[in-house]
Amino acid sequence: MNGNDVDVALISYNEDSISDFRVTEGEYTTYMFPVFGGGNFLSYGLLSLAILKKYIQDSVDNIFFVSHSPCADYLKAIKRLFPKSKRYFAIHDQGWTASLLGDNARFTRIMSSFSYGKEDRKIVDYVRRFSKEEKRMYRLAHRVICLCQNTKKLLIDVYGVKEAKIRLIPNGRIGCSLLTDIEKLEVRKRLGISTTDIILLYVGRMVEAKGVFELLRAFEILWSQNHRLHLVMAGEVFNLNDFVKYTPNSASHVTYTGLLDKDRLSEWYEIANVGILPSYTEQCSYTAIEMMLHRLPIITTNGNGLADMFRDGENALVMQPCKDTLTESIVQCVTNMLGYNKPTLEKMVESAYVKACTDYSIETMYNHYCGLFYDEYR
Image 1 (cartoon, helix red, strand yellow):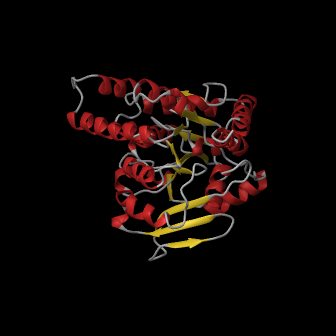
Image 2 (spheres, helix red, strand yellow):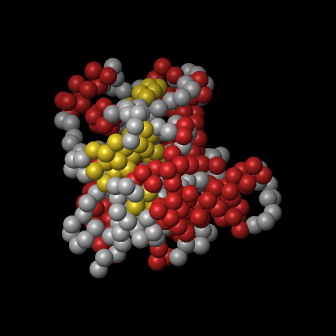
Image 3 (cartoon, helix red, strand yellow):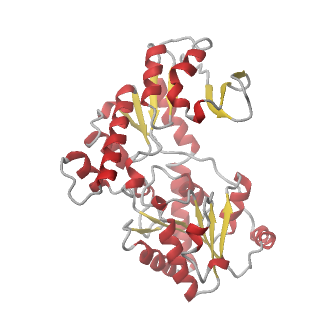
């Protein structure tokens, strides 16, 4: 990196379409590694980086940008083989969030206390062990990039990272094209969705921390009150039996799409009536940005990351991410949302859309990263 001249290279691991290391040239250089070490490439960081050393010259102008976690040994290998180069690490998740369902106070208590209290010892041991590895990662990095205010605060208060090392850069998305009302009707017909069905759309991983089980419980209640409702769960499902048991009566009105490509997912965004993000924790949700750009009315929580993006009644309906009350909250929010008049919904949707086009645009993200990179060379 030198002034405005930037060369970008992508290091790609676990390429299952190749059997040997390859280098491809195009708009940017790609260094491709096949699957090795059972896919656990980070355990062989010295090996792969030793190969890269034949192609990449160590220089103070180099930045290794890493976002896979945990990767302390990998960062250490970069430091050893490329001592002049800088190491940046971006946080897309933290190890404690899923186990503790994003409960910041609980995490802080576990990390600051020597007593277990009522905590499960296995969970405590896991959280502390993983957090210790994360601290190593943050120490080895020259810069730590986080995606939301809550994570930045935890980095300073709990992980002990100096604020000068941290940069807050939310995700960004390019805009999307919208369908006309006639086109939406055509998509519904092709997908077998009635024109009178009210589609509630969830997009994401099917895991506990995303609030999917509470969502399914809530839909069973909602469908008993309104048979026009249809829940669409977009994302990979590994064991369907774990999910259908929550909707014994409404199962025929729940669609599991599996993984979708960009265009097919865009169609669901376009024909949905309400987007639901019941996550206990996020960093900076791409799904949330996509729903905002597709002008969907949104129901979500004020969990980690999402609290930066939404304000209750302003650009979404926002719930507390409490396990004991989340199902009831989803039922109430969906009922309220469907009862709003058109001007109220349009105002909320427009506010979310404007925020997505400003705070979470690809241009904003680009400018943040340009500022980060060029700060090193001024």
